[in-house]
Image 1 (cartoon, rainbow, N blue to C red):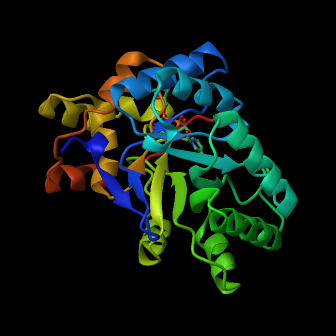
Image 2 (image 1 turned 135 degrees about the horizontal axis):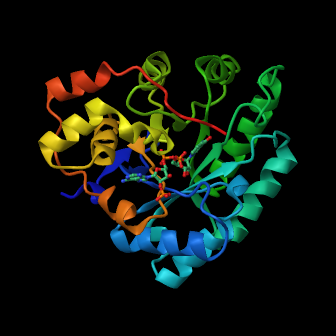
Length: 276
Ligand SMILES: NC(=O)c1ccc[n+]([C@@H]2O[C@H](COP(=O)([O-])OP(=O)(O)OC[C@H]3O[C@@H](n4cnc5c(N)ncnc54)[C@H](OP(=O)(O)O)[C@@H]3O)[C@@H](O)[C@H]2O)c1
């Protein structure tokens, strides 16, 4: 069966497609709509969105224009990282539902444990409050699964030590050369499904000579090798692309990296991202 039609099973029994389409930095308006329509035509069944991307409305519009029933795809949405109070959570979630023109999302995540650009300060109480609000959304059926993003082991332990429920998902930066092994082991031990954001290291990974060498030998692209590596790790990649050809070829992952190739990719230790 084609990978586009395969799912992972979350700890609450909800199925999440093994591949998603990322929408960060798609400019609002036609560019987002065109990219999402192209992705839906290519067969993606999973869209990753966030209120802070400022293009949710266009994602909703693209779904409507394409004509697919939103219930037939999996939509991941996220709470802005600076919102931690209960009422704020409900307000932001409601805004997202309106933007996307849906009555619930499949997965709702706390986008980050701290506001973007804030690296110090104790957000443990604030994250517990936000998490309890997500639990309410889940109980009310407004999110079929709930989770977190960018949470470290300490952030996850904070929820656990308070006796709160275990997130169904943690969405983290994960790509060849940046595999966050301790965090991944923790999540797997606690049955928290991992999602890989920036699975191509925002494109910077694709010049890696080992990746290029492996891609040539298998007659695929470096991006396909990078994505297939993540799939074989049991993690759900959500590559973003605006280029129609990339949107399409990033779905063609029905080949296998053998154990020695996986081991070779495991030896890469490198984070080539440039954030500014
Ligand atoms: N939770 C979080 O905090 C968080 C943070 C970052 C990202 N995310 C999510 O994860 C998604 C993916 O991450 P990302 O956008 O950071 O980066 P990414 O998917 O690793 O890389 C996207 C870049 O790679 C290029 N690209 C895509 N496919 C390619 C191919 N086959 N060959 C060559 N280049 C290719 C794209 O080019 P073009 O666009 O020009 O086609 C774009 O410049 C985001 O869109 C977002 O949904 C979440």
